[in-house]
Length: 149
Image (tube, rainbow, N blue to C red):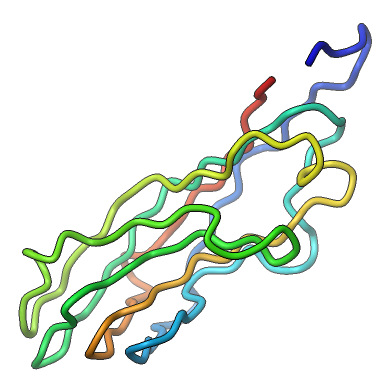
């Protein structure tokens, strides 16, 4: 999609999400571990296509019995859950371990999500079988909107 000459293509600065405290994540359900908040929403200054990259690192404390699987998701409050997911490699889910899960999650190019309203971004964790704790000390996410087509 072409853009009109003179269109404001200003892309907002990246946003850094950090956890204010450790988050206990019970098994069998998604729990929000990082949240951009409802105000201000992540948005652009002009219409057109934009996609979101979420560069993510989570420090995760596993219990005496590690979960059998762990899925990290990027959800949008208005546009919907499971925009992108990452399954942590099962081989590193060891009893009493502290692991770093690092990945980049992605929201596909959209001409409607980011302008004019924007959206709230949530990073969630969902362990299978056993609870985990996402530590505040090593967990962060950089959100960056990129110009698409």
